[in-house]
Image: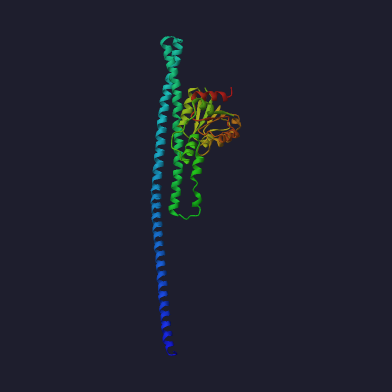
Length: 224
Length: 123
């Protein structure tokens, strides 16, 4: 009995050793697999980040080039319409002067009788039309202002993107962008504010009704 | 010779429209592209019957211009009309406290505009 014991003990020790070795091997294998899985996930994340970064860089670099082109186009439209308005004013001035001459000539020579009376009423009608044209032509200025209010935030966006591409971790960059509030502050016309509100609310564009002519007359003038 | 009106607006179209309306009615017009240019054209002895100014302009805006004009003894009581696209009550109140005489929202009707001009001009 006493002699059989050592053999058994060696067997047990060998078995335990083998078990431990197997456990160690298993643990090491599991850890390696976990590490490999973590590394693979990290590689995937890095690749995704690289892809995202590349996409944003592509977008920013295109936007930085595109924005000055768009603003230049806007400026060009403003300049062209301004030139057209200037030319029209010269023509209207000439028409108006001729109408006034005709009216005074008709007034002095016919004293309101016959064909001269017709000339005078024609001239008066022409003068009234000129007034309406002057009023309508002011929409060039209003369009100009609205386009400027569109161009200005585009320029700000370009500056912001340039800073972002140059140094995305700059501490002041995150709080520098305040475009929505600045755009809202730049508005001077009620129609701009309404269009902004409608867009923010996701409403479909249906046009903004203006006040009636009578309402406009009342609202447009305030004497202090 | 008609009375002289100073027209201040950064939009050439608007300056030309207002000038056209006023000259047709017999007024003389001096133009400026912004508040700074307008102040440069004014001296203390300037004989101006009326100032018509825009609100939003580069260099010096309409409100600053009014404050500068009101500092000039010769122009302390000269009527000043704001002609602007801005229609908010807040801005109108700022115009009033700066010393504006009236506020006209663009686009202006030439006949109505001339009526207002005649109303604010001293008889």
